[in-house]
Length: 237
Image 1 (cartoon, one colour):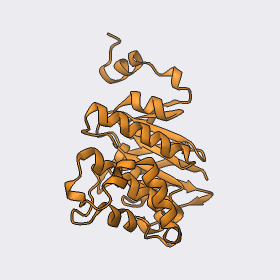
Image 2: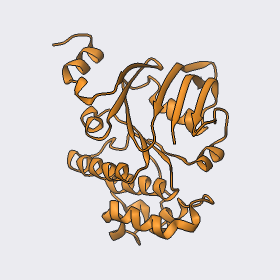
Image 3: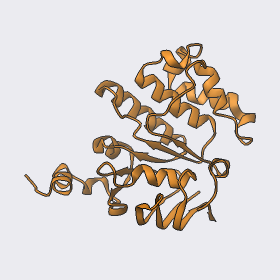
């Protein structure tokens, strides 16, 4: 499995957000995306997912160009997108929501095995399996959303701001659990403003600015807080 995005342009109506962006994800690796808000990170994931149409460029997944494919076809290829502030059906139990995540044909026969894997990574979900989703805490809802994504047996799992709005202790717990997901061999794209979290999870990071890749960091040791300050605020104070 490999994802190669090249010269990708997309946006909303007449407003172009991505301006020829290129990046790649190797099989079984985790890639982190960070950068200022409103510069294209979420649009990039939505375009890969088929939710936002690509204007030009290629999205090659496992040797096949899926630019222009609809969301259902993208999921069938094995790409699952856990959106920012993911919502769950509030009246469903955790178990029902997780089971629904295995709806695609390739995943349904393996739903029991997938459920065991999800519960091993997120033991709190096993404790809450009979609880309605509306009663979960913010951290538990995010765990459940990622669990639903894993139930689809993704080859590439894309997480958009998974720790957004969470307390530091819960953020650390969730980061550890995302690390466990990476250890299962699933390729990951993680978007987050917490660069320290990304540094702990991802061997390769991309800085997204103004709809392009402004920096490709292939060695986590290359990135220091002083560099971030300079990129974001224009000075190395």
